[in-house]
Length: 248
Image 1: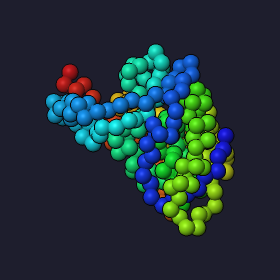
Image 2: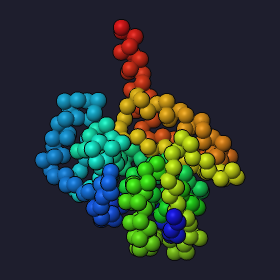
Image 3: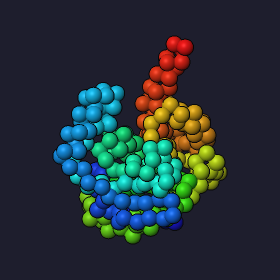
């Protein structure tokens, strides 16, 4: 599955509720949700009461957001009422580092709602974007919609007077822990975002993926980058778990 797109100069995020339409499969659902001023106040109060979670709510804004939900708790230990992925300010903030760093040939593990794909494809220094998505149903929900709107969206936002060559956006259905990129492929930037929530249990998977993809990472590139979503926060939780265990 490939779609040709144009580059862009500035990497703002798109409002995904205006990009994707509600849809569902047997196990997953795309649905927009509203956050009003009252919700924002409650979220910020929650951050005051529980300081450790304040960072999740501090930039929350009223608006309409798009969420990817698992039916019957599919892939999400949060249950059916919390999204596996959304485009809330917290999600944008915690993915912004990679969007800024992305250049050359990019590999992403985890499609979600495609929130980071759009701004990355819009960068002139990006040649291609390949996404590994484990769940075929998520790919079927999100990719066709992005495929149909990407050229129009990016053309409207094209700020480059002389666009560089068109680039490829490919979604591969597979497991990041077993997927084998082409032998001769080297990615300049790699990002792992396959976890629906932050927990110390993510740490081992992050280490395994980092080690596994080093042979496909072009570390000699101009601006190489490899990272995992909320790695530092997960590492903090691991340290806290060890402190708790040491008390017993």
